Image 1 (cartoon, each protein chain N blue to C red):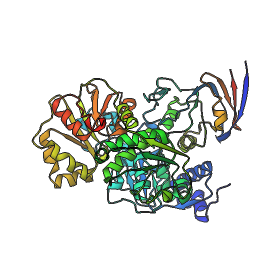
Image 2 (cartoon, rainbow over the protein chains, first blue to last red; image 1 turned 90 degrees about the horizontal axis):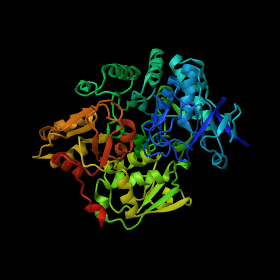
Image 3 (tube, helix red, strand yellow; image 1 turned 90 degrees about the vertical axis):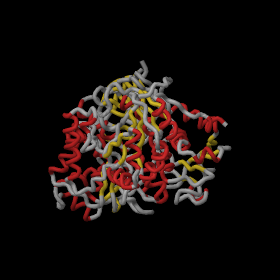
Image 4 (cartoon, one colour; image 1 turned 60 degrees about the horizontal axis):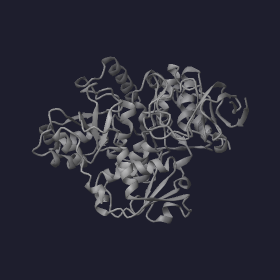
Length: 140
Length: 421
């Protein structure tokens, strides 16, 4: 068992814990995330078919549709969202869903931006702890 | 770097302009901070993508704002809704779903917006001007406004567009600022025949390729030898904003901030230069089709919404023909464009062919297709990109002529010759 500590920037502060689901490829939640189940449904995406519910989802940023925010907000309300999302830069679309979820339901989704080198160390199925100050601790 | 708010912004945040403006400003200011903006700027127009009904949360957000008395501060157009307000019963839309989607339409209409119900607001009388600061949602509209019109908007998500419209303010960041509008990647067309460049299906294929390679960067396309028309640029942008996160592009000699290569890059050096070859284009065209079958149940056109000029191009292709009884033929458009097409006499031809028209919505946002419709064909790369995930349907991509010929033949047929060379 090795533990790796990566220090990121807490875009939206919060704590989370779960298994990592990692892709180097950006994702649109509209047409890419089924908020009823938490499944990745973009059939052209490497994570197609994976369930992201309660996972620590790592995608570099969002692509495509403006509706990504609305879909993530539905997932947060429905309890099918990832436990936290890790990106390589501030992702405005994810951050907004989290800010609105706080406004409506007092339940923001933790978001952390990692440097590209640190992001590259993430592996699917790592056990991940996200701390409120933006640290990402991996156990594998 | 911290955010500085004006006295007026602070008054709004305190609630002096009412509770809806307070909620909207608190979201705008919080997100401006998240994005690292130093201040907010005035906008003079907005386009609201939040109208698309996804589920309860989006509806709760809209109704919360509406119940607080929200009113927009700037002229504001509305994107597609979940419903063709007057014709949804002709489709498979569940009535409970329709009720919710309709509530969302009512909520956004109550805020003093203009009910355009279209994803192509740049083809309405609300088309923004060069240099105008706006806050737009809807990826295809964003990329068109920035690139083709030279208006300025960041790539805004749903829910944020309406907060900007209510406050009349947006974070001073990204594509609002001249220095962030410089090209980053150079795409050079390498020996691409002019006759292919003239074709409508060239642009979605090129857009799909470039979006995938550019992702969130600003691509510059050099080597287009013809003057593409507006609907070709619209199809290109919609494709690039689907396969990638492209919010702005430059085409040398064509788009307004790219009269020359140095102007497009604002004198900077491209991060990377990428050659666009025939082989890469063929591959991009291939991947837009996600079926091996020639079976066809429905042709769908109008993603983004059909313009008057597109109706005009379609009508003569349909003249004297009739669709195969096993194939539906659907065009999605706005009320305004459909009325113009009616006056111009195009709709009669569509009707005789057996085409259907739906307005206000998009089959990607509305559960209108019955289950037995499984195999679709389209001329839109955006539609081809999203249909498999959103609808779980098979999709084939072809030119407008391919779509018409297939609808008549009752099976998918595509002319490969322009792409072979």
